[in-house]
Amino acid sequence: MLARSLATPPRRKHAGEEAKNKVGINEIRPLVGYQLRLAYLAISRHFTAAMAALDLTQKQTGVLWLIGANAGVSQIALATELDMDRASMMAVVDRLEDRKLVLRVRSQQDGRRQELYLTPKGRKLLSQSKAAMAEHERWITQRFSEAELSALMGAFRRIQD
Image (cartoon, rainbow, N blue to C red; front, side):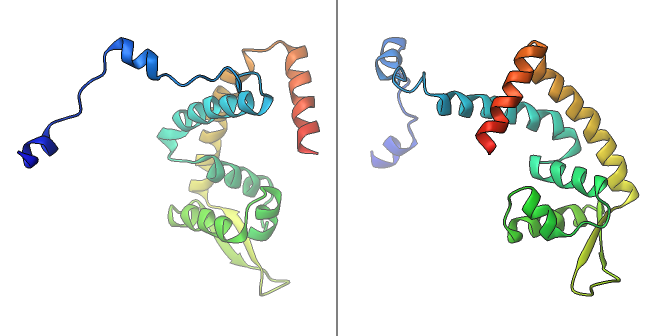
């Protein structure tokens, strides 16, 4: 009897029960932080889908872009710019290096420093990710007028300061 009850799937709730158990969010709906979180989640889901074919996360994409724009940059400089701890940055760079997208080279000026460069494969993937990112950005920006986008970007900058 016990084995049978464990194997029985849970009873499906009826529509009336679902409505009765629904979480009320009226108190948090007007909160700016809550709305920003919902917007972030929607954007993050879309980004993940946009980059799925390239097998890139948001952090990996950002690191590729910054290395591409700053050949020879150090992991520490990247971590500082992206507000990441050193261990997390090392894990991201390790993953990109494992995929043959990034090359670590010991600095000629400071033997303790590792310089980061994109490989040809990394440059190709960066180019592909920029195209995917442009589509992703269009998905976001098409919802706003130029004036709204300008105001939104200004608001984001004020929050970051």
